[in-house]
Amino acid sequence: MQALIDAIHTMVLPTDAQRIFHGRGGLFPGCEQWTLDAYPPVFVLTSFLLPDASTDGQLAAIGQALAKRWEQLAPGQALDWVFQCRSEVLRTQGRTDTRVMSGSVPDPHVVNEQGARFRVHIDKGQNHGLFLDMAEGRRWVREYAKARRTDRYGLKVLNLFAYTCAFSVVALQAGAKHVVNVDMGRGAIATGQQNHQLNGVTAGASFLAHDIFSTWGKITRGGPYGLVIVDPPSYQKGSFVATKDYPRLMRRLPDLVAPGGHALICLNAPELGMAFLQDHMQECAPELVFVVRLANPSSFADKDAERALKVLVYRAPDL
Figure (cartoon, one colour):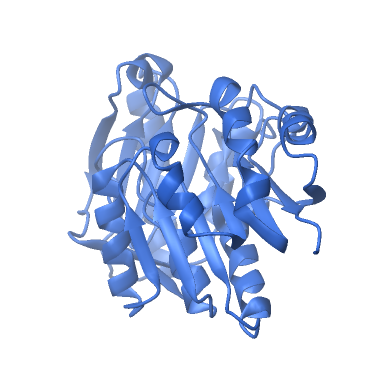
């Protein structure tokens, strides 16, 4: 655990939501099970292994390190931290084991990232409302929308698998004219609407709580789009299985992306590398040209880039 303890001892006061320690990247032997995130004012320690006889002692050592560093960073302020177990056994059962170890969790809990505000719910389930590894993807969308805000007809964005609509918030903040958010999770879409309100983005967004594969008529009628964002789960039974469904989705892209527009293709599946996306894009949407793979946040460094989050930019040809 020493690498994790060292990361705690040297961390700076977090203001934005961010990862502090990424043992899952495999760069710290012996710490592969651990991650530590900051959702200010709460720290979230996650283990991807079931607790065993050593867990209580490890948690005590981590708690002591957090308390010592927090007293240096925020003297006199209460330390809020949560432990969550997300072992494979629990994951396959759709469960997590979450414990408040110290302090409390705000309700509502709102965090900042790059000037935007988002609702999170770290004590409910495996997904906390904001995927921290996608921070650079959101930064890219913000810059893209800013650069296109002077387009003659304004930038229109399609946000597929929108989840809590963070991409939509940053695009509209940066000057996009309209964003269509599509996700079959009604609860996620409702949180997405709250995120727009939190940021004072009261116009320019529409929300479709539908299964994407049964909503193509509405989606197509709203296009074409200057930017199409595709950020699906890698495996969600009854919703999306990447190996089967991503090619079906890619075939739609040439009709959805406006001439000169772009598509942001995302996948977080360690077992599927870059070739999975690039080969299927070449087969299913050859008109779209690969531009770049976005770098992940430095706090998510991984010894194997093929296993890490993949965010690829493609461009449609001009007229």
